[in-house]
Each structure stands twice: as structure tokens, then as C-alpha cells.
Length: 81
Image 1 (cartoon, rainbow, N blue to C red):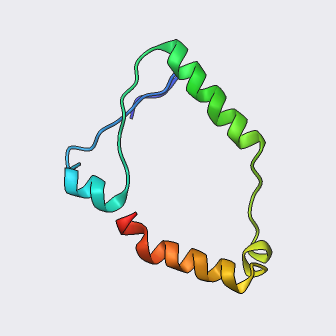
Image 2 (cartoon, rainbow, N blue to C red):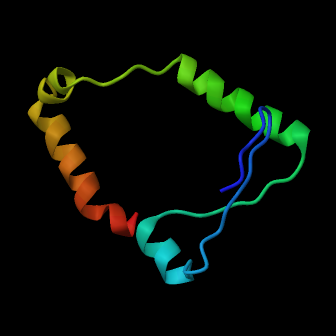
């Protein structure tokens, strides 16, 4: 894979990527060109990371029963969402 310079984003598409795979796995590859766009996307990602925190196992275990049931239902139905 080619190295990326700071301020650049590149998209890579798998040759085995099929529409059914996109529907079932919930991923989509997008190719974007332009340094200004790459900087803008990088800024959005950095802003989101600044407000994020690492979730610990203790936090996951401390969820309420309704929260655990909601998460389990979301996992169960995620192929259809």
C-alpha cells in the first residue's frame, strides 16, 4: 500500500467488493480527491477524536440491564439496519 502524506486521504477498493457484500457488511468505499477535501475530512475526524474517550471494560460491565438489552438487540438486527 502506498504511503500517505499528511493532509491526504486515499480510498482503496477491493476487487472482491460486491453489492451484496456492501449490503450485508455495512461498509462502503468512497474515493475522494483534493487536498482541501482531505484537510476538511481530517479536521472533522480530529474534532471527533478530541471529544472521544476510551471505553473501559468496567464501563461496559456497569451498563444497566435495559442498556445491555438494547445493545444486544442492535447487534442482533444490525445486518438488517
